[in-house]
Length: 77
Image (cartoon, rainbow, N blue to C red; front, side):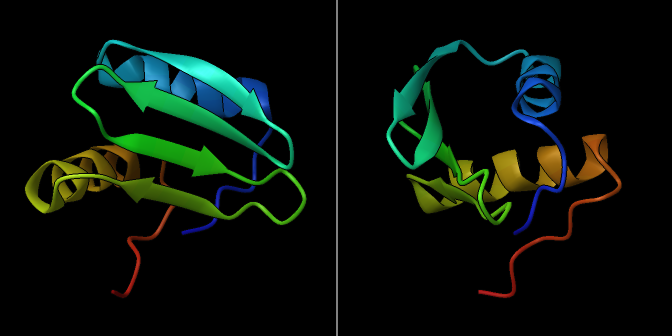
């Protein structure tokens, strides 16, 4: 997936999900670690956005992100 916005916009988008977790700066990318164990990674340099974790939870999170922000398209994998 690609998120074309800013880090602040991404933080606001993740906050809309209402899922607990915390942000980390991991050098070349930003990461939101959900308390459930899933991880959202975003590279500001190219907008790449990935979600990793349990397949069912990952799919639900991606669906909710896409629904909340019309600029996102679900990954083709």
